[in-house]
Length: 430
Image 1 (tube, rainbow, N blue to C red):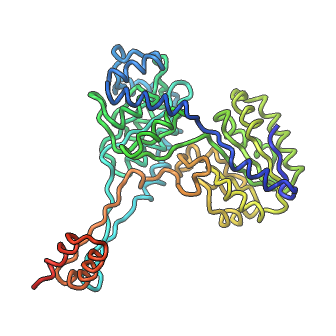
Image 2: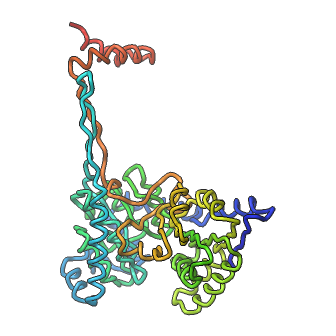
Image 3: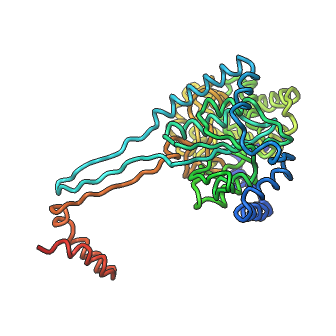
């Protein structure tokens, strides 16, 4: 059964702290194993990638080739049903439109001393996106990662996706084509991340790596950060649903299970002002669980990490939400803006009773790559600017240096850096 917490109970503070502090991510053994894989790929390159792919995915790259060719991708387009192709095209269009509006503008200004300052934006030269493979592959992840990169102007965009048992998901390949991916490699796991970060004879290194994966992929991204940029270290998915008793408990139950079915360590939390409504939602969850093909994962998630919090009023919910800093926040109230405007920490907010988080996973437009594990306190979801860099510039000129140079000399001298002072002082001499 899910955890139940009453915000008016004497033990609430300690009970809620346990909920906030629970960790659902990988352990030190994964970090050790990933470090060994990365070191192997750095040393032996393509040979290590091929051996690891054969071991973990049962794919002989010597026979299949490491790159998935355009003929295979074209065949994938022909193989999928027209309604699926239309849905992917709609999703790609909406995601592209939303992200096009995110393109930043630079700044170029001249102050009263004639000093020109500003910044300009430019894309990274090459990016790699990771997409889980096999039957659990998600074409939506391709669109959400690749389209912002192409909108940013990334010239070389590659995708790595494992093909266990040489099984290729055609929807993933079609999504890659729609999103503008330049090259697709049939490799996955920590070895794929290492190949993207350090390069091999076959795979040129990239500057940025994004995309979801299992604990080994997440840990590999953590370990190569600094050599390359990454989007984030993603953990298990999570949702907080805020709802009063005017919502349909079946809807709320479905929304909670939509997160729970991702993984046994996903987390679904309901915050409500009605204990009776919480009971109704819990009963609806039990009914719906029996109908899900994903019941095993969803039930494990709900029974281990699912939580129902009863609050005296929804003003009391706001600090609880900020403490949880959820990846997804659904607000199912008559006046959802009260919560929306009051909350500071959430990856993405879904406003109103007719805005299930699941629609945001596919076709709404905003990115579904979001911070997990309370990281919404200090980070944001994937965007166009994640594939861009901001470069500042400065043009002081003669007049400007006369105006501000003496202060620079003074500060450099105070810091004990005489060469710094001289580089300015020499230019101030008549």
